[in-house]
Length: 174
Image 1: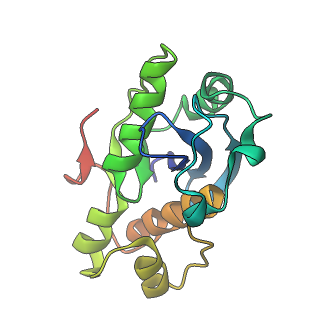
Image 2 (image 1 turned 180 degrees about the vertical axis):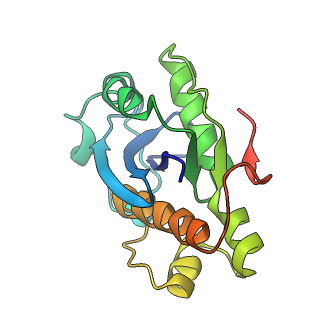
């Protein structure tokens, strides 16, 4: 089984570079072997999504910037074949915008979208993360980046156990 990482961002506001939390679950041989969670101080104090994830400026004002947080995470992701995310275009967009804001290279790994994977593998509709987790019996504390990332990893693991293999057309190009 391919080594991969699942990633989830929570954002402070409508700006794609406003990541305020990131969760990562690294998977090897079908098992989660590492979990990372960091609060991030976004470039702006404006928080519009506190009602969704519970985070506010006071929670992150002393956190590191994305550049500092990403320095630690990027080294952990060096050997993964792909990044998985639920609704990958969102997380891919946040990662790209944050990298652009801080002048960092965007990771080379392609993304696998677990929304698309769940639809293709199990015909799950609706395909919001809580729906897929309920279908697969995965515990979830929705909109907590660490829990969302772990749930996403478990979706990929379940798909692998059901016969899905990386490279069968569900990954998005860089």
